[in-house]
Each structure stands twice: as structure tokens, then as C-alpha cells.
Length: 271
Ligand code: G3P
Ligand code: CA
Image (cartoon, rainbow, N blue to C red; front, side, top):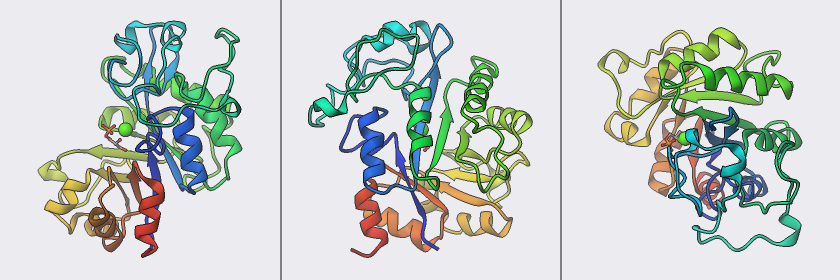
């Protein structure tokens, strides 16, 4: 079995992370899946930003949850990166409710815009949405996410296998809320350290995939096998180094999240 290649924050080594340009490049490179992090703005919109603050990845400063969508959208989320500048044909419009001026592929990305890209992408492409700050908002992020997925007809697939979207979190409570309210969406419980009780490969009943960081597979290469024996899949992050890619291949993980989808595919294909 070949692991499926998931573009982590888009093809984020070669385009600024969480920009439309990064996701467009990932699809061009034949990624099987796309990964994004979501946060809630002050006025209740879901935006694709990894950090609590926008300082590292934009021309602005501030905490996402204290800023309105309009204020966030005023910043450039691509200039910090070494990507080539956007060309005229890369201009896109933001969803309704924002100023009508077109913004480049490197503007703020809303989850709504990314879902628009997903529904136009080949049907086998799956989006892995990771909820951030789920504790602070006590379920609001998941509620907004599920409402948005419902608007795009993505919240109630016929089966988990056929779902275009999977939801992930480091918070077990967040994953559980998703299972309760949208039982047909596949879920991934992310971990950066393995609690003793989970070393046997077991998962709580509301999670379908174990989501270890690749460092955990180095420490305990038998883990993915024990997860599989219990009937679950493994989603491993963040797998850029060719040695890590080959490790995931040997261990038959189902998904690997990488910042370099094209190079990862080449390693998997033995090129
Ligand atoms: O794909 C899961 C991985 O993204 C979790 O770590 O910090 O990159 O969101 P982080
Ligand atoms: Ca993430």
C-alpha cells in the first residue's frame, strides 16, 4: 500500500503556507489531499491560519481571534515567503461580504474559499481540516465548521470512506464533538506524544485515524502496525525528509502530510 500524499498547508515549501497559490500548486503536483488549519476571527469567520498571531505569515501583526475578517484581509499573506510574485491570472475574488477588489492568490484564505477549490478539484482529493484553539471557544469552531460544510453539501457524505473532508485536532474533545454532530465525517486524533494508554494502538471510539508526528514512528516503529491491527488508519505528519517518507512507506501509513508533495511522490515512486 502506498501512503496518500497530503499537502501540508498546501505545497508550503514552494508557496506561502495557507494561500490559494499553495493549494493550487499542490493540486497541480497531484497531491491526494490538502491539509489546513482553521481559526475563528472576532466576527465569527473561519480563516486558514496556523499561528495564533499573524505576525510570522503576513505583513500585519495581531491575534487572529481579536481581528475582524476585513481587517485580516487587508494584509498580504505571501510577501514574507520566497515564492514568486502572483501573476495576473492568479487573481481571485474573496467570498461575499468582503470588499470587491480582487486579491492575489497570496491574500488571506478563508475556509469558504478553500472549500470552493475543493469542490472543483478531482473528487478523490480529500481535505484535512485541523481545528485550532478548540478549547477556548468551547465548540464554536466545530459548530461553524460543520455549518459551513453543510452549506457546501460536505457534512453528510454517504459513508466515511466517501467523505471529501476529514476533521482533525490535537484536542480529543474537539474530535468527539465532530463525531457527535457529524457522524459520517472521518476524524483524526493528532498526537505529538503518545500517552501510555494509547501505545497499544487503540483510539477513543470517536476517532478513525491515529495522527502521530513522524518522530513518534522513529521512537516506536511498531505503533502504526498496532493501530492497523485494531482496524484504524494512520495519518503521519510532517514528512519532508526522504528517509521519513520511506519509513512511512515501509510502515504502510495511510496518509502522510508533507510540505513538499512533488518530491514526496517522487520518493514513494522510487524516483
Ligand atoms: O497535519 C497535522 C499537523 O499539521 C499538526 O501540526 O503544528 O503543523 O498544525 P501543526
Ligand atoms: Ca496543521
